[in-house]
Image (cartoon, rainbow, N blue to C red; front, side, top):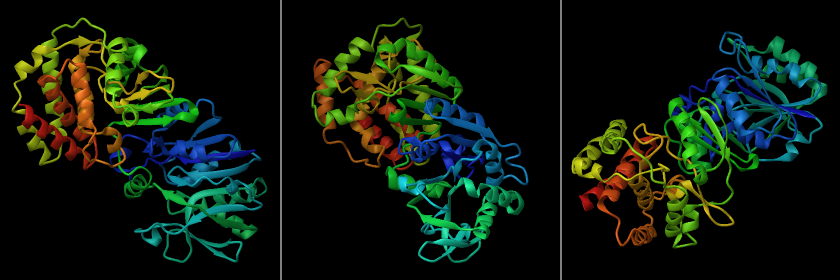
Length: 494
């Protein structure tokens, strides 16, 4: 048996806009948290996660995302104090590892799947060429000799020869006593205890070999952006939110920085139970629901040009039920005007000025008089609809409220969101493709036919407002694309 240890005590302060709220190991890449990618790459056996910063957040995520894996979280006392560091974290796992072989990795290291890595006669450290665009002295370097790539020296972040150490190693059980001794007695580098003390001990006791891996470093914002460009094409993550899709675990996990909003989303699911997946568990900032096999509405639209009519028929039965509403006009004003103005305030210039001028064209008193209170989805676009293999639909990623109301929302908002998703193809945008969707107009025409021949002006105004409100939640250039399309729409219809 092999213990797989993930070092996740550090805060990840270099991770930019995502690292301010999420622990580094939970930053999404291609729809999964970094730590979930690592768990998927691990061999069968126990997983040990050494935590410190945001420990509860990490523990909650692992409980929701991987309920069937043998995962133990160990908190590292003094992880941020002098003498802390990766070596200190790894020592915390010593008893849990016991006499098993041990693989350990920093939580910001990814590699290509390679089961042959774990079939070894010698303990090893994984290396790779120094990442392009980075200074060699930034990295711990390992010097090797011979065709077997035996390690002969380790240099801690100084300018020298050798490949970069990636943070991934495998220590065989027979070598663990020497390795632990090295971490304890020779691991201090400045004020931090490093794992390299143990690796140096194995070089002396011998042998320690190196294995070259196809390495993806995600240790800071620049590295993360390079990884996103290579894996996904665009940093789709919204401010304050993250969605993790885990088909192998049968789960989708959602993170929200705003715990109140998350609670409302969890509670509101009961009113749209037949149109959304089953909730399985939740924590203060995370909840999980069943993964629904199938394809997105956007993918289905490429095969079925009548998919929007079928979706509207389904929603009319399973989603949109008449609901009682108190002061609907006031709620609509708060939602359409108030929320839009709040989101515009989050925009960068000149988008802020452009959007402000665009919504000045709207007659708000006229817009709020047509409210149709229903049980609603709230983010009803083809990317948030799953078309199941046997037929039928399921709505995912529903909104938490409508201007504070959790039992009802304006039907026109769902209709407007659906229309907006034909003006901006959210499915392609998440991969960095922001081109206009040529087939979008056809699907708008199908929607118009379903509505009796036309899409009313109020629905299209709401579509434009939804694009403006979405813009500041996304990274450049999608924020600009959303505002530009919304402004063009408002100029056309108002």
